[in-house]
Amino acid sequence: MRSSLLKSTSELLRRSRGYSSSANPERKVAILGAAGGIGQPLSLLMKLNPLVSSLSLYDIAGTVGVAADVSHINTPALVKGFMGDDQLGEALEGSDVVIIPAGVPRKPGMTRDDLFNINAGIVKALSTAIAKHCPNALVNMISNPVNSTVPIAAEVFKKAGTYDEKKLFGVTTLDVVRAKTFYAGKAGVPVKDVNVPVVGGHAGITILPLFSQATPASNSLSQEDIVALTKRTQDGGTEVVEAKAGKGSATLSMAYAGAVFADACLKGLNGVPDIVECSFVQSTVTELPFFASKVRLGKNGVEEVFGLGELSDFEKKGLENLKGELKASIEKGIKFAHGN
Ligand SMILES: NC(=O)c1ccc[n+]([C@@H]2O[C@H](COP(=O)([O-])OP(=O)(O)OC[C@H]3O[C@@H](n4cnc5c(N)ncnc54)[C@H](O)[C@@H]3O)[C@@H](O)[C@H]2O)c1
Ligand SMILES: O=C(O)C[C@H](O)C(=O)O
Image (cartoon, rainbow, N blue to C red; front, side):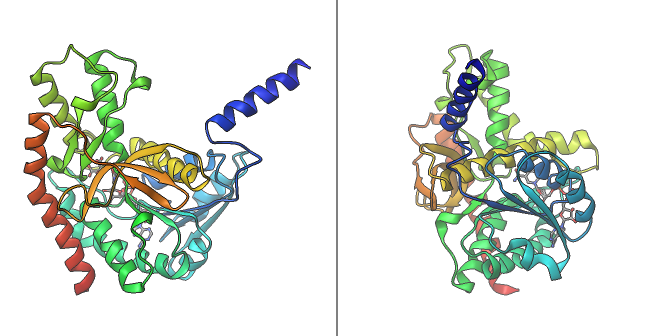
């Protein structure tokens, strides 16, 4: 009696969090770049996600071992590894969500844009395969420079006639994760209660955390604190790149952030209401064609792109300052997609 009560209570809890075991449809998630620094821990986290029934791990090398390893974990998702161009189609076939952490990471002294020459080609080729093999999947773009790789994917999908602006996302969740952590530390509030929208893009000054909208609100932070928190959030990636001293960029925190965002996409697809995350999407919030802001996720991907709300004078200035760089990065991606 007591154990059946406990069972039904835990099922109720799972349902209220969007993890109902009986009601969820089968969902296939593919990770492209699954053997990399982000790809491996992200594969682990997606294997632990109860909404995933099939997990497809693709890379140009190393996926046999990663898939064998992850597949031994006693959770429901069936894991398969795929390697090389010949197996990319099968890896993608039937995917509901495709997560892309494929490509090279930064070393100290580099900007994300310095990765463009290598990663643009990788993203273009993978997007071409997605258009062919799973044109209806939600695409979570992690590969940098996100401000350019998302427009590249959009152009590839347009050319293939499969573009749906509701289904393409630049993953900016790590900026939100960082803003929450740094804000909680400075304001002295429990990190689990904190929310901070981060808008704009995903590189340097294009990352604009809106601490004026942070909750719980804090009266203890000075303007200097806000300026310092903003700068630390904008430089969060560089902080990790420098600390790793040539051994790459954020992988573990990114895998966490990628798993949070993919989970939100799956919940949206499954009809869980009120799933809201920040993401770099096609947008009319500003004059720029792509922009990160809060979006509501639903059965078709993006259900609603939220506006920016009220901004402080400091944030208004930050918004104007980021537009030039973000516009140039978007245009660079579009030009590349057409030119090559
Ligand atoms: N959006 C973000 O917030 C964010 C955060 C951290 C890192 N990143 C970016 O994610 C990317 C990956 O970072 P990492 O640290 O995992 O790098 P990594 O070098 O450790 O791993 C990249 C993986 O991609 C694979 N790969 C290369 N070409 C491929 C292709 N054509 N198809 C499939 N896989 C391919 C490599 O074999 C490798 O396993 C980088 O571009 C990095 O800048 C983005
Ligand atoms: O900083 C990087 O190059 C990786 C990533 O974009 C990050 O924000 O950590």
